[in-house]
Length: 345
Image (cartoon, rainbow, N blue to C red; front, side, top):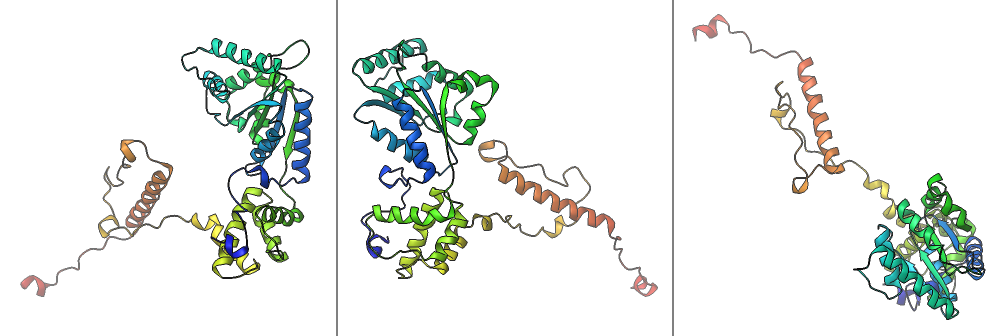
């Protein structure tokens, strides 16, 4: 571990959504302010769209932290579910377990808890992360939650957060009623190249680093290019870069270290096809029979072939067919004619 080597109190490039490490770029700052205003104004439905790895979950935790003393919150990650399971997950977040209850009773229980929080003067905030995975029927259930209101105010705020596919779902005609209720939609864009330096230094400072910049300018430029400005990619890259620099006993991450990390992280070098052993001599010219190409073997546990198994099988089939075709086009080699001398022998 490189923490002691670089004088760090904790891991600066971790994989958990720790709000302490949240770096507020211009896009993050605008999204946070907009969501905060939407909750304060009781706007009902709010949206947050971002590519994977952009830090939207960290941003949402940071937002909820601001309302910790004045709101009841529920943060839902379980989005592969039906409507009944969704309501059960939601109630479980509020401390209510009712597996035996039907959907109508769960709806009534949720309304009861909303009213209790409203009488206590608390806001009610529901965050649904990875909402692009919700089925249309579940999104319709989410829409119905907006019916919980008094003549003067909404009883809860719902934040739908997800990847760009969420925008596509909300734009579909079948969900037009839900889309009409989403009053604020924010989108977080990747960090520009010039901001990568500030992002890395911010996380290092939070982790306790004091001293000269660890990354030389040339290294930062390559990191920005390779990671495409996605914070999660930057975190992963910097973790590997600091680990390698520590192993080399270097106090700076230079261009050579960065290039080595790029080589290590380049996933494309693992995309080469698996080499196959050469065909046996007996397979060079298979007989023109029905079993010239063996049927595909069963997959694991007797199930169908996986994509990798199917690709491997088809490649072997192609090799066999090519060998067979060559055997048909080549002249047949006949044994040498026997001479009279050989006959007498």
